[in-house]
Image (cartoon, rainbow, N blue to C red; front, side):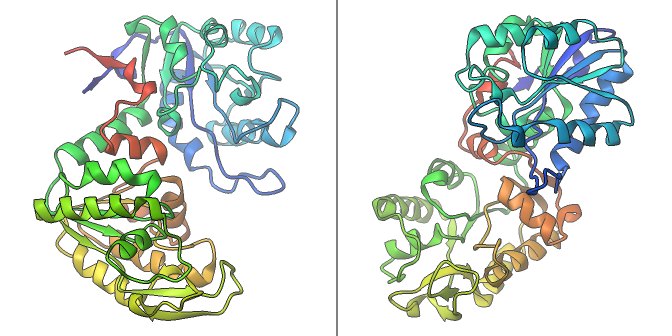
Length: 398
């Protein structure tokens, strides 16, 4: 898959619309608690400024019910961009009203305008053509640098691309890097290739698992989703999270892996608790001894050691999903141990998914990972072998 990239089109002195992903975590006082997604977009933004472009930035933030919901405003993002770029950021009051279109029209070379939250407008999620046309009217060039939303057919991601010729639209540096990394990892990995899959549910990762089995040498399964597999093997798992309707799918995946000689590793011990509560009484048990009314909320130390041994010879590690309820300190040890193991590996290590990216930041392992993806759903769809809606229009024909 050959992408049209920003460096291969002429943007000098032009008005450039960059779709970014500034959907960053904020605390109750609207302070940004992790600006990694903003910093990830800086290379593309600076590249445009250096070429005397006038730059229009657009992003969604959260899921606002209406445009009057001030807590979803991108004003805190404008402040952080001002700090990082060391220049004035013009902040629009809305997305595509006349005053914003006028601001965009009057932008000078090197100036930056940030539109208000795209999801304040109902046309964004509806992939509305009229809304996309208004967004497109602001610029000569369209750049998608928002990998995290490129799996969604939204107006600023998909519909907008119809209004630009092939030499007027491209992938930004971040999007191109993400696509290349996952394409290479899935299609041409250095072996042994080990995938670590966690998180709460099998349903969200079923297609990815089916696509991974023929490509990897080993799969390590943890988190809540492991209990569906353990139940499929006949274990009693108490009140642990199980998707009973997916037990047959879990059996199918394990049978397929066996046929292909792919080794699947599941937890051998868990930290179980009486309730899903940070204050609940917890104890370490083997998977054969989970009390009837208790639930497993983290992998245990024996599992962490088993997974460490399974990862020892890996040359490529793809990790998506934590091993337990890492947000609660009592149930974070398994995920933390695994994070340290992967960070200390000599393998190429790729972390996909918002929760996993957040986890490696908390554990202090961020700088030791080869690559941390900015998109969870998008990275899963790439692993599933899909072409993302936001990427399709930027693929050059061979």
